[in-house]
Each structure stands twice: as C-alpha cells, then as structure tokens.
Length: 361
Ligand code: NAP
Image (cartoon, rainbow, N blue to C red; front, side, top):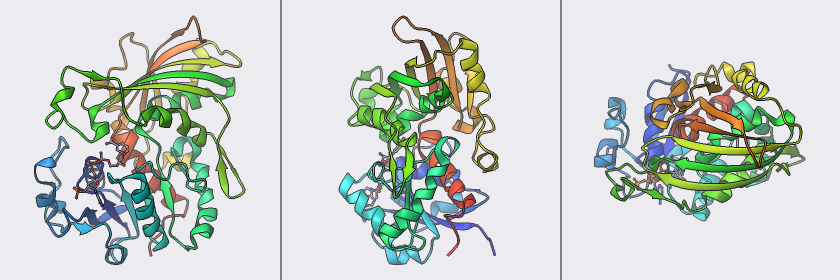
C-alpha cells in the first residue's frame, strides 16, 4: 500500500485547483483522493465538471478524468477519504472562513490559497524559505479550535512573491521604505484571454484589494510569534500600486527601496545569488535549488522568457541601479500560479509534513 498522504483539492475545478491537480499528478508524498467543488459540479466526473474551462497548457491528467467531484460541504464523506486538503475557492471572505474552519474543526488540516484567514493571528502564512518557523503557531491554533490534528495554514498573495524574497535577503541592511508597482498576469484573476477578451491590448489600473494585501502581508511574514499569536513587523513602510496587464502568466514588479545602512550594489547581488533556504526546505520535493537569481542583461527578467525559472518556483531579479529618491531600484519576477499559488501551497504542505504537522490519520 502507498504510504503517501491522501490529499483533497477543494475548488478542484477552478484555475488554481487545476494547477494543483497537475502538480500533484505524480507527487512523491501526496496522492489526490478527493476532488471537490461547488454543488454545481458535485456528482459529475471531473472531466464533465470542468468542461471547456480547462485552463492549463498541458491536457487534464487521465487519472482524474473519471473521478467523481464531491460537494465541498460534504465534510464527513470527504474526511473519510483524505488526510488533509488544499483549498482554493471563489467564495466571499465570511463563507471561505466558515468552510475552512469546518474542515479544521473536523480534524482535516487545510492548506489554503484563499485570503480569508491570512490575518487570523494564529494562522501561519508561510513562504518556507523565509518564515517556516511560523508553523509553530499551529499548536496555539489547535488549542483555540479544540482539535488534535486539524488546523489552517495559508500562503500569501501572489503579488508579493516578486519582491518579498528579494527584500528578505537584504533585511540586515535595515529596510525602511519600499515603493512597489506590480504588473500582474490575467491568470491571477482565474482568467485566460479567451474568457477575458477585454484584456487583449489593455492595462487595467485596478485590482480590488490587491494593494492593501501587497502592503500588509509582508509585515505578517516578517512578524514574530508572541504567545498565542503572530505579531506583525512594524517596518518597512510599503506603498504598492497593482495593475493588470495583458500577460497570461507571471507577475513582474518594479521596486524602489530605502535602507537604514545602504549596501553596495555588489553586496545586494551577492545576497540574492547566495540566498539559501535551510537544509530541511532544500530537501523538499518542490523546493527550488536556487530561490533567487540576479540577471545581468539590461532587459531581463522578462515575463515570457523567465517566469518558469526553477519550474516556476524561483524568483528572478534584474536591473539593479541607484535611485535619485530612494537608495536603489530594481525589477523582480515570479510565476503567479506556481510560486504564487498552487506551487507555493504544495511546497508549504511538504514543509508541514516534514515538520510533523501533516500526518496520516
Ligand atoms: P476560479 O477559477 O474561479 O475557481 C473557483 C473554484 O471555487 C471552483 O472550483 C468552483 O467550483 C469553486 N467554488 C465556487 N463556489 C463554491 C462554493 N459555493 N462552494 C465550494 N466551491 C465553490 O478561482 P481561482 O482563480 O482558482 O481562485 C481560487 C482561490 O484562490 C481564490 O480565493 C483566489 O483569490 C485564490 N488565488 C488565486 C490565484 C490565481 O493565480 N488564480 C493566486 C492566489 C490565490 P465550481 O466549478 O463548481 O463553481
């Protein structure tokens, strides 16, 4: 018998859910045993439920085609088939919170892509290369929920992966002020050009709620566990503008930063290229060998050429130069549905397994 953990995908028919299905097709640690979605899809085969909404470049893996999609609310039945679930649903905040808490309270751990619980004090929001130690707050969360194995862990918003890893590598120089503009792909809204033709030859200077997330979420990532909560860091101050651009996949960011102790340009590049996650993270199946790279060419990174670096799990930096208002400015790029969504969540789940928080029932 396989000793893989049994995983469910809640929201399996959506864009992030489809990405989970592809990433987990041959995963060495996790076997997908449940595909769940709304009542509209429940009872249909996965192939039928997804219909013409398949948005991946690769075809739907054969092994899922005939699996019957379950109703996300049927938690008792799902609980009998899984050790934990990934969750990516398009519900409002309150309903998402309720759904995820129902799973956790029924002793089904949830690794979530949704934003609803990102600011719940005892829910870790992890990028394993940066703040993996935050998983320890799960003990306090389990006490609050009254569970033995159930908990919720979330991953941060896709927009921040293009600049937070790069800034994290420079923390020792004292990050004071950051101005960031993100140029975000349409897949971040669950769309392709087929179902969002208005995006062709267009830029839309508004993504609801994105700027607040981009300014606040890094502070939780850089926060500290104090008692039964994670207390946000007080600095740096971040000002963000987020715009939607006519790109299928990949979020690019331009960043300006002011330090307490301004480093030399060479020091910054050295910090990025030599950034190493700890050995535990590096041993995980989805971890990139090199998390951050610096590209010397003046016109790189480019979204189309560079988003798939390290299987879409690495961050590409470029165009580092002095700034007349801040100390430096530069460009960052990450893949929004890999590192920024499903890939980041799979890596988080691997980290939670390696640290003993995700176990077989
Ligand atoms: P999506 O393509 O619209 O898919 C939404 C999924 O939610 C579908 O499986 C849908 O099932 C399911 N759903 C809808 N209503 C439901 C209900 N009442 N009960 C249970 N399931 C329900 O959305 P997405 O782009 O995958 O995003 C999903 C979540 O991930 C969102 O919270 C989003 O903010 C977050 N996220 C997305 C990205 C990205 O790059 N796209 C990045 C980070 C985070 P049916 O097919 O049955 O309707």
